[in-house]
Each structure stands twice: as structure tokens, then as C-alpha cells.
Image (cartoon, rainbow, N blue to C red; front, side, top):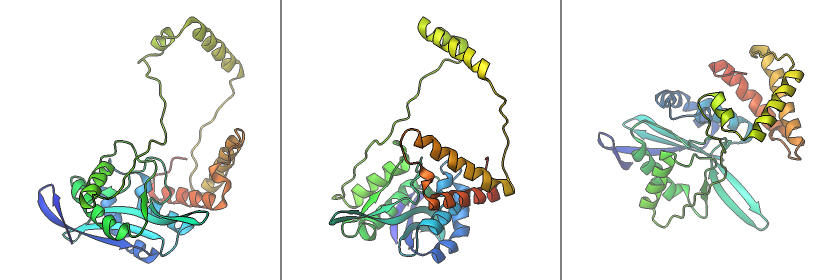
Length: 269
């Protein structure tokens, strides 16, 4: 048991680790209950369905390292991780990573108000069993100001001062601040830019074709998803890059996820 200060005073956090699919399946109900409490601080990539489907397609027993934090008999935090081994010639790197490393990686489901306590409990686990030997924790695509990430880093430094932590900015999302109305935007452009814009608009009007928007449900999902895979790959091939869906396992996984999202009422395809 790891003592951890909570919002309303100290309480004890206990950490256990799920390493098999059977253990993962047994956690479904408590995972769903925590998911329900984490509205506004979760993404589909932290749902039980996403992690379970990813494990089914890409992982197996022995690679799972799902950290479950409990307090007073209730699950208050879940941080899904998997073991990944990288080879560099004669060298190898053993890492713990988020399953599926998708965009906006919020790392863990955390009971609102108990973030600091849960961060300490996870940090204590990582400082002991989690980072045995030369193992590292590698978390990709985490928002730069994600509070739980900052709390986890602070807790790691407190529990194990010798731990080395590095944050690297890996991508930027460029944007242009825009006025509230279109006319103000046009007025902000140079005369040359306005001429280019007018010319482009005339060309679009001449080439305009009828566009129909529909939604796919039920039996139509498989065909539409496969069309999505093909369009995505074709687009990236135009710039000489191999697309995400060249791998049949990746296609099968996303098709499975789409069916799961349809079942849960999350899919807008």
C-alpha cells in the first residue's frame, strides 16, 4: 500500500498490474465505472473497448502492463501500458508505452480531484517494479500542458530523484487567428491576395459538383471503412509516403474499433 494525500485528506492507494487478457477482461466493469466519472478528461483511446481491441490485434499475455490504482476498495486510476522492445543492431531498448499511441494521449483515466495522489502511486510503482533494469517509459503525443503528465513527472522526481526525464516537442499545429466575420478577413488581405482569392472562388463556382453527405451504419460500415483506408493510402502515396493502412493488421484493428464504436453509439461515419 502506498500512502497518498487525497483531496479530503490522506488515503491509501494500492497499485496492481494487469498482465493478461483474462485480467484485462475481468476489469471491464470497474474500467467502465471510472470512464463514466472522467467526463471531460478522457479520450476514446483510454476506453476499455479501445485498449481491449488493440490488445486483441497487436499484443499478447506478458506484454501488457496496465497499472490499476485502487483506494478504499475502489478503482481510482488506470494507466494502460504495454512492453515494447526496440532493437538497434546489437543494442536493445525495453520500453513501456501507451497502447496504440494515438493523438492527444492523456495517459491515464484518473478520478477527478485525486490526480496528485494517483500520480504519486503510479510514480512509486514505476520507480520500483516499472523501471527495473534499463527499462524506460516512453509516452508519445501528450499535450504539452497536460496536468497529469506534469504531476507524474514531479512525483517521479520526488520518489526517485535520480530518474532522468526528458520532454521533446514533436509537432506543432499551425493556425491563423481569424476575425469574426468574412468581410473583415478579406479586408485584412493585400490587394494581390484578394485578387487570387476572387479568381479561385470563380474557378470553384465553375467546377462545382453536387456533393452528397450520408452516414454509414450497420452492414455499411465495413465497405465505407475500406473505402476510407484506400483513399487515405492513395492520398499519402501522392507525396511518396506509405500510409497508415498499408498494414492489414492496422486495417483489421480500425475496422473492429469502428464496429465497437457503432455498438456504443460513438460512431459518426
